[in-house]
Image (cartoon, rainbow, N blue to C red; front, side, top):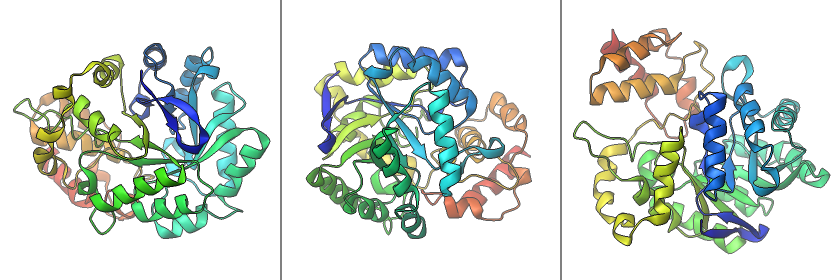
Length: 363
């Protein structure tokens, strides 16, 4: 595993890390298997924003014998009250969930504490206050409960503001072939993303690139059996961008981990992402990346799952997908079109419109 340096922190990190969001529904055994396999292959950075108790307990067991050899992230603001994800901003609430993180991960510190999922200007102003989450994160660093402060977002303008405070050691930001196609150009353009990464490099802010597969959209197979890009091409693009120290592809099992790590042994021809660029816009424009940052839903709909089943069924009608959709406790039929999800979605997906499509398709 080739290593890179995490900005001014000076920490050495494997250039491919592990995103773990897709392990939320996994069994304890699978979580441990994936983490241990990643460690054996030289993965040192682990992106660990989920707060589900079963997930954290399994991760704690997986990392127990490895703690001094890995870099673990925590996110101030990632909570799951009533079993639904919610981005919290109350300092007391975030402190409670961070203490839960330390207990379940069987550790007394996180390597980096991120200010979680910050994209709007109002949210940024709130989070970056010294009596807000930034102050809480800095306090954890002073007390030794964290080693560094990070900022996690999907919007250039707000991420740039955080970087320019001088208080951020690390930025977690989506860097992938699709670039601005996930967010309207008024929010992110390819040029502005490049400028953000360049400024991070100049300021010594380490960039950890999330969603190198564009939330899975770039590598998802279409009915013709092809995808817009291979995992190797996606990682080659992400790791070629200025300032990027580490890419964290999400992996749900060991097979997906191996697909990512195939990058390490890939030939220059296999890493060439040029042929993929032409197909990218058609594949991902306006698409949901199943992150569930749109939650909580007042109707308790798992929006990401509804979107995932809808996308797959539109590509290829399959009885198994139909059954899985109708096995959801709450589905698109329960949508009250309140619009709260669309306000939270960092990718500006037309969620209500897609919910209506699901109602029609699966009725």
